[in-house]
Image (cartoon, rainbow, N blue to C red):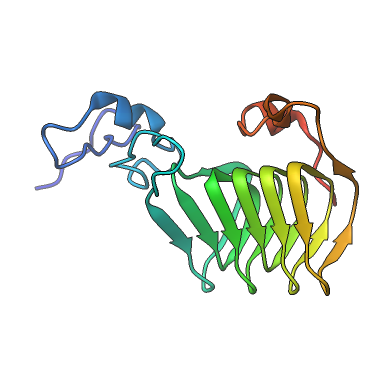
Length: 172
C-alpha cells in the first residue's frame, strides 16, 4: 500500500499559478520551501509592496536564520535571526535578536543587534541595544537606545543586503 521513496530529499512545492515567472522561485527560502511560493519582484520605490505580519504568538529561532520580505514586514512576535525588507516595522510586543536591514525601519518594540536603514525611527516604546547605521535617524522621547550611531557619507555604504551584513557579530 505504501512505498518508500529512494530519495531522502522532499519534493519542492511549485506554485499553483501555471504562468508564474520562474525567477520568483529563485527567491524562496530553502529552509521552508512553501513559505514564499509567490514572491513578487522588487517594486520601484514609491509603490506599496505586500505586507507580511509575524504575529505576537510566533517565536522563530534558527541558526543563520534570515527572513526577507520584498515589501513591508511587521514583527509582532519574537525572532532570533536577521530580518530584512523594503520596510520593517517592529511592533510594541515585537522582539528581534539579530540584524534588521531595510530602507525604512520603524521600531516600537525591542531589538538586540545592528540596525541598517536609510530612514530609522525609534518610537517612544522602543528599546534598542546595538549600533544603528542610517542616513536619517529619529528618536522619540521615551525611547531607550544603547549603542552607537553611524551615518555613512553615501547610502550605498549601508549594506542593506543581508548577505553583505552577514559578517557582523551579534550581541549576546
